Image 1 (cartoon, rainbow, N blue to C red):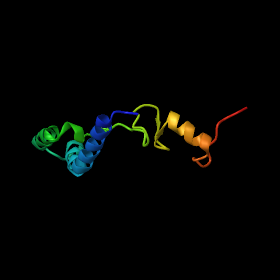
Image 2 (image 1 turned 90 degrees about the horizontal axis):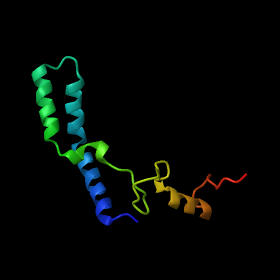
Image 3 (image 1 turned 180 degrees about the vertical axis):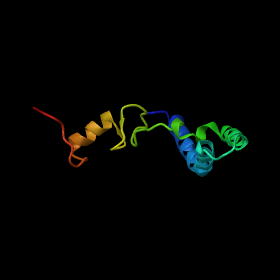
Length: 101
């Protein structure tokens, strides 16, 4: 089980990302446009850097929905490998079963 503070920190980051997503997209559009002037690009870059660091999507971590474990998480199921295995053995995951040959 992950520390509750780490899980809560990730939830806080997710809220920040959602809040600043529109502004981030607009600023990045200015930065990547060919017709924007150099001064406009500099201003957009400065505004982008003034945004909170945690509002960047790359700082969000995928975590297990049950335990909060940050590693070995299958995105398709939202579970860590151990919990996915347990759920598979119980038959909770449709179409998934333990391999045997």
